[in-house]
Image (cartoon, rainbow, N blue to C red):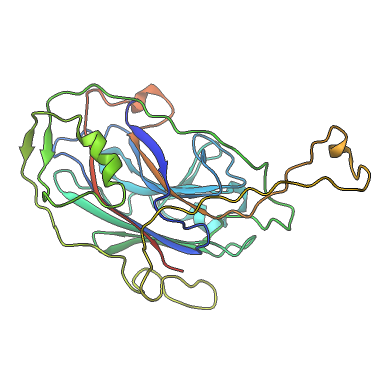
Length: 315
């Protein structure tokens, strides 16, 4: 159905409990929303937490547009661990086969102008329904939940098999003449500027369409998204958003034990994998029309622009 999808980890957030993702998106004034489409969010655990994955040991917090530009959180997380209130709230639809639609229609994506979002995720205490998700759109809080279950307690009975390494795919679309929003020449697109710049290079000779753009630098804000209380605390203090390469992973070689075979999983020299704690991993960039059937497909080539990506390790 066209579009793009990839994963990015511009900074190491694996040790974070609270992370904010910010970006701006532009839909042309004549954008055809069709039925639905995906937009970037955060993810943790492992890649592939989409497309009907059971999400037993991962999570993702992409956003979506629906018909006429209605917005929502499209959550992948353990489905049977969520509170009844999360799935029965106005605008929420918890699909048994795919992701959980949270707050559908709580805001509307604007065609012909830039929309800036900040999504802040505060991971739940492992095994508890106390995770936080806050979404700000153009400076206004539109979704705020304090009862999200992102991860299981690995010491308990939950969890699933570890090591899903499903890789994202990207489907090219035909390049045609198009209109682009006007942006500042000094704008590098934020953290994903170099990657998105390659996509932008495909657009040659296009006519620029004037759009009202706020070029002020947007920074993750202090104590704006979630208040601190006994049940759910979130952003406090200045977020640390030092950008740099993620540290190289350390590989530890397993040493053979001197004892005999302890269980049946060792008979062939293969030890059963132990579940790992689900942690933040990075950005899940996703933008395409979908949908799991052809009725979601766009009837013509369409374009969406992104800029000002920022990732903040709050604490």
